[in-house]
Image (cartoon, rainbow, N blue to C red; front, side, top):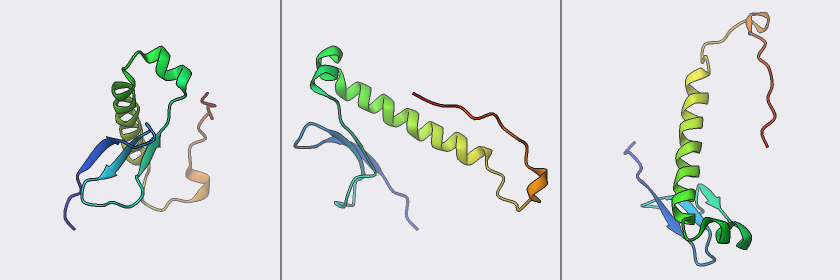
Length: 86
């Protein structure tokens, strides 16, 4: 399987999207800012979208890293606290 390359693009409606360079199908991620948010960012919305996508990719890497892919007995799992993100 060949490696995929990704790009962040601005869509016609002003949203930002992460997509594969060689694929015109639906984007992997879309980010949409309200008019109020765009005003607060003072034309830095592309930088914020890039930071949000980078943080998401890093989070996926951390989650994938924490998963033990070996099968374990159900009683051997550590109980982890749950968190609510807002």
